[in-house]
Image 1 (cartoon, helix red, strand yellow):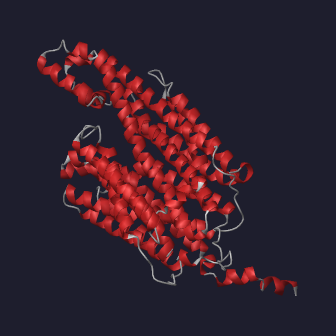
Image 2 (cartoon, one colour):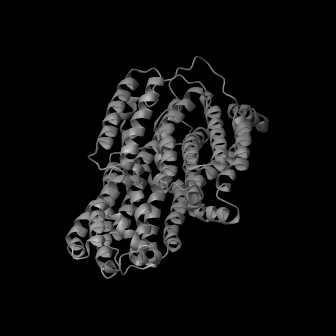
Image 3 (cartoon, one colour):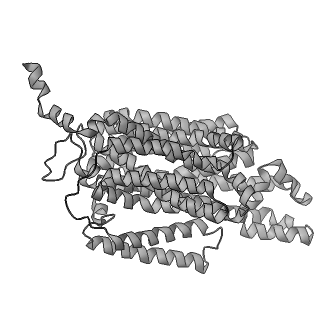
Length: 549
């Protein structure tokens, strides 16, 4: 009799009626496959770029292969999160997968650089939809404690793609050709579509869906203008040029208009009222500041190792491997640790560990070995792994399930903006410091060179000091230098060391600000319940919410 009562309990009946619980393993498999091939695409393509440029030409357009993807994937994230709340998880996720697969095929069929850039932008739309959707669905499927574990696993998958991506990309390019870097997405993507389509039941609409079209337009214009200004400012155009100032003005006008529109909209893409919530503002602030510092390490440590220590590009990549491996391990462990020490303490601990890593980075010099640099990478990876998975978890624990999509996607959105801001501001700091040092120490020497040699070098010092550092990166580049400059390479190397120290110190400042901000995070408890219900929601906690699918 006891067994019969247990089998007929409401919880068991709910589980039996829920197709998601029954197909949970199938769904998780689809999510993992989609996450892996989506994350791999960002690192595999970088390996293929030299071959692409070799076939198509257009070296000046090469950066747009990354920029186009970054722009579209960033702006679509909050839109996808909101639409997932409005019309269901499955239709949005599968749409993103199909866009990504179709764009991958088009990228592989491209006949020139312009076509490839356009299709990379389209691919970014699919990628920007896919990446937050996995975390949103994890938020739907699991209780808080289970989410901590699974989001750590998905964070580890993302980190793994960063480790194996360049190697996989190199193998594909060497074994076949660069087009297969894109074609490889097709069979894997189709498998993910099939699994997710089967495992996620169809959404049943309960009313008319209202799209915030003015909000979407103003947000896209504002974010794209801001990202373009940050991307091209100080490199392609001076910061004071009309192009960059115009982009900033357009960004400000559009984003102010966006805030006004969102405050009046019935179904806003990013509700302004969320920013009044301390948890929402502080968690996304921490994510933004962490991303600024994180990219300071990822972008500039390889430059230090190649330019100062003098190791090859492939060897400098192995220096970054400990960061990724440690981040993977810490991401998995963080899901268990958070239940013992809590969200705020773990977040603070992770930011402090990152800060210590940056302190060590700022002490690196010409005598720094590969082993020492790798040990510093371990610290950074440990700190990042402790923080990254719980940013999303903390937001999901603090809001009702009706807003799960928009708050989850906001976490990735602010981290992507932070990464772009970090690369820009830290790069500008490096250029500024380099110009000052090279003007003081190299320019007086260069003025003594013959005019045909000295004048171009002086222009380079003032306009593009980073191009001088390329001479330190390989024997081939060094061989192209004027013979008068060969003996002065120590001056260039000293300028690079001091400039990178400045970069790491400013990265440290951003991480410390993030650590301070964690102190204002409320007391968030990781529960045994699934996403919080809105008032009046009568669904059983084990049932799939109507908006999920």
